[in-house]
Image (cartoon, rainbow, N blue to C red):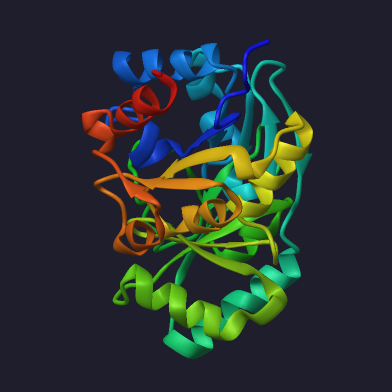
Length: 269
């Protein structure tokens, strides 16, 4: 009987990690993931993108496993094309959190990701999407952001950088929300206590695997909770300094097949 692999789960962030800049996965990375699968390890996508923003991308990649989406707020079965679990952010709490943040730093601009497989990304006047390729619908005023349940709020400040805005938000929101820095120009509010770490714990429970036997790959501070839960954390060469400092290993960049380099070593025998 063969011995189980050292890692039974390979958890990968998408943007800046598994995906190249053009939203594709390289042939070498695909081959490395197949190598891990042949050794008995499952692949788990863990992304800040909500289900509507990742559903067709995963289908195009041929991915049919579970995916932790929306910064841990959604657990999505890509093969069945259905959401398994979802947690929404209380809209009154979210509005109150924005008020506290603005009392601290002045006007911020907000957007929301709505709950559901067909949920929309709504942006208030003044908010600029960090990635022009991501679809969004503009509203006339902030009140329209709360028209339907949301999984997270995205905030931007006209002058403060991401780190300063995230720190200021954490200092004042208390238990109204969890604050996450997930990418350039992207500071987010999720339900309190919900992050990628909580999301990957739910996924591991669903899959019946031990997080101690999980190797995780990421590039931004929002991947820190995932690293804290997993047995081994690998930061990309292009990763944020905070994640690089917390990682067990730093590999090559997402453009240079950094994930493949590690998986080939770990599962190649």
